[in-house]
Amino acid sequence: MEKIKDLLSFFGGKEKLKEFARQHETPAYIYAKSIVEHNFLAYQKHLSENQGRVCVAIKANSNPELLKILAAHGAGVDVVSWAEAQRALDCGVPGQKIVFSGVGKRRSELERAIDAGLAAINVESQAEFELIQNLCKEKQKRVRLSFRLNPNVDANTHPKISTGMFENKFGMDHLQVEDLYKRSHQDPWIQAVGIHFHLGSQIFTQDPYDQALDQAFTLIDQLRKQSMIVEFLNVGGGIGLREQSIEEHIHAIEMHMKKIVDESHGKNIKIFVEPGRSIFGNAGILLTQVLYRKQTSHKTFVIVDAGMNDYMRPALYEAPVHLEYLGESKNHETMDLVGPVCESTDTFAKNITFTVCMQGDILAMMHVGAYGYSMSSHYNLRSRPAEFLWDGAQYRCIQEEILA
Ligand SMILES: Cc1ncc(COP(=O)(O)O)c(C=O)c1O
Image (cartoon, rainbow, N blue to C red; front, side, top):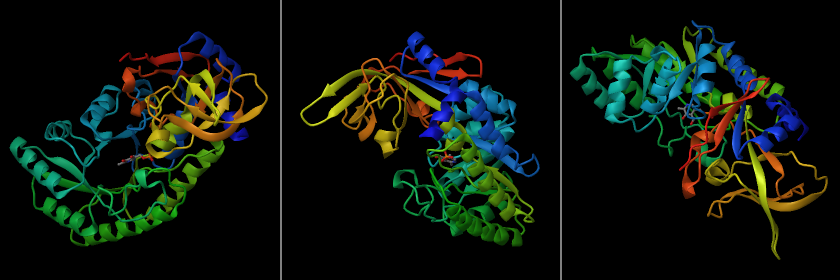
């Protein structure tokens, strides 16, 4: 836990956070500007403009202020809806740095993407490809496409966040991608520019990437032998986050990037990466207050004011919650940490041994900057929490609480 504890200093430290909680409503998300920047630059430094691009997956966090910070550092983005693309454009990310993924893009979204001249639309099926062909012909406009390969590689992650196996809905097999790439070659409105894969999230070993890279380079060789142009290989995101210090996290990013860049060396190809969790995850905390202690004949429940509508990952796919206690107690007990939402799955931790939390005590849920606020909802007609940015000197509100 020491490693996580050190993290609090990036958010102003324990005392400032306690003062913050006295002055503001909880639950509230707080982001550390410096961590977002450190994480992004750890990726960026391996890819100069002519070596490739870091396209941050903003489904993980689409707060406009964070996007502006990343845009100022030259970030590209990976989007999965036109609304995300529009937000990125509004925050200063040029269309030529946006890649558009997703298995179910609507016709109107594709039309806008074609008009905007994105870096690439990532094609995920033959039907989508054919719709894009028709739209381009109607509009008499050219579009840049990349094709998502499903390499059927097990990323050894939770099944609910695995995306690179045949049983997952994402991407296409080698033969389908090859076929569509060739068909692009014969279509004057389609410019096929790249190959893409994304294996899943919370990945901690390089092995799945190595396997997918092997397949992707084999495919790229085959395409090039048939005179097709492949400008870039997009290796997706997926680098995981666990109880670790900032230094260890940066080291993991660096090792990953070094491996990818080494393996693509001499292949005359640009590399795109799409990190989400590893950019925002450890840069966000959720402050919450203890509403009640509830002692039953069976167990102790500590009920906090944050619920699964504020932070959904534990309920959705059993994501572990790393907690920091900001109160005064010294003793420990075994308890369940639960939220106020009317679902039994609104449980952040079960049977954990943790500091005895008293009514009014403040807790920080650590590592919740990715897929935290962006997945929050108004379930039970609860508010979506406010978001703040710690810039090293002050907490600035970057998203007011939104009432249901
Ligand atoms: C296509 C694509 N790229 C990148 C990401 C980001 O993954 P992560 O947040 O694990 O880095 C995702 C996440 O679902 C994705 O679907």
